[in-house]
Amino acid sequence: MKKATMTLTRRMQITIDLPAGEQRKKVWSKMYKWQDICCRAANLIVSHLYVQLMITDFFYLSEGVKYKLTDEKKDIDGILQRSHINCTYRMLSDRFKEEIPTNMLAYLNHELIGKFRKNYKEYLNGTRSIDNFKTNKGFIFGKEGVRQLQYNEEKKYFGFVLFKIPFRVYLGKDFTDKYLLLQQVLSGEVKLCTSRIKMDNGKIFWLPVFEIAMEKHSLKPEIVAEASLSLEYPISVKIGKNRLQIGNKEEFLHRRLAIQAAYTRTRKAVAYCRGGNGRDRKLKALNRFKNMESNYVTNRLHEYSRRLIDFCVSNQAATLVLLDMQENIDIAKEEQFLLRNWSYYELITKIKYKAEKAGIELITT
Image (tube, rainbow, N blue to C red; front, side, top):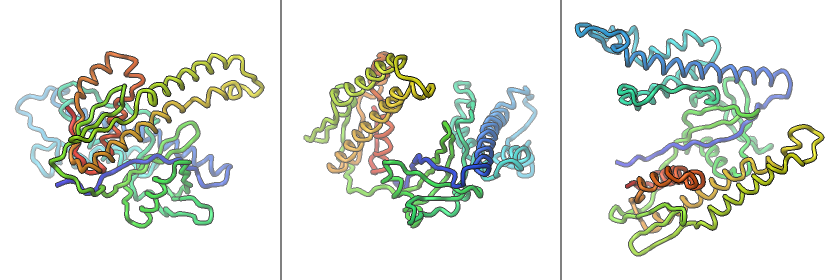
């Protein structure tokens, strides 16, 4: 049975809804402290989980010793004083409960235990090392932390309170999708799940996870779409006698190379730019190109993947097959130019997400 819902994450900039001054400084200090604690807690969790997994190798237990990573009250061979999941949470709670909301610790613990179990065999075989977390990961919290989410009709903005800290949401220029999702959360049509907050270059970003209903289309299992990816034409798709080529080299690659060339020329000319207000004045022209290439590529790939899925839906194709994937991966790895300019993996990611949302099965060969 196919899933009825799926999750998606959006990135929204938020600001602290307090007057500038001592209050705001205290909030910034508190949030940086939470971020630091979550980083340390994440490293402690994976370290404890790894030790529990490899305990027999570390201590060279004899064959006669019996042990299980379960509560000793529930199993005679158990070596834990409480449940496996609760061990790491209580360890964090004992260390940090007075310094950070326990809601964050609980969701962080749940997230990392799930990820650890997913990679269990790789850790056991030695083909994967445990993760090392840094403060740029931010901090995670549950939907219970987001309170009083509302839309201010007079000032036209969304706001919410997170652990007694008021925030205002800035949706930016491309606000249509985010605005609709937040309105649907208020009306109860969409469920708000976990969220994460990250701080970057003096800005705060909210990354909420939404649970949305899958799109319903009248797709036919016997109809299969075959697509291939290349640099000449980003996507070529065939469904029976219907064919479509999406994008072209002139549009995607040449425009991207033009942006790179303009960036290089500007960087060489920076030394001759008029100063007067320090480094920012000198780099003013160069900063215009800071995100120009990545924004252009992201926009193009969204457009290409959207057109591909729309073509499949209009032809009622229930299955999408991406051909010669491994061959394309090998070519991209050998050719640095392709690896740098094709954005192959990003395109696949966007196709996969949109196919799942439309209820189309994606197969790679």
